[in-house]
Length: 172
Image (cartoon, rainbow, N blue to C red):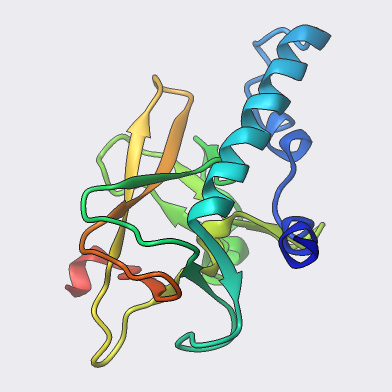
């Protein structure tokens, strides 16, 4: 439990994500409280499926399955912050951002160097050489100003197996 609680400190908080939500929405306390509760429950659901680890991963830190994940399952990354305008090119070059490849435009901010926090998707390692990907990003549009990033499981993943992705779909 301590380890899980400790690594959650490195992820974007509900307040970090709420600060990125369109300014057009009301910021009344009940709305914000509901958002924070929902965000925390979604992050807890992700934590029950997978966690960051530096053991048995391709390199550095990666994401490993906490339980068996089945092909076709979708795991929401509630911490991936959708932004409609292009971020600074330095963020893109650092790998802190992914561009939506679904034709709808926009980006997901995966890491913020100003506070050192990141979305769990930031820790997905790339499937290279003999490693085969078992996850792909799936974008669920919520209108023009919003979207959610899911991990779509493309093959069964055993407990403790690393989740791997192809960063550039054109490289497949």
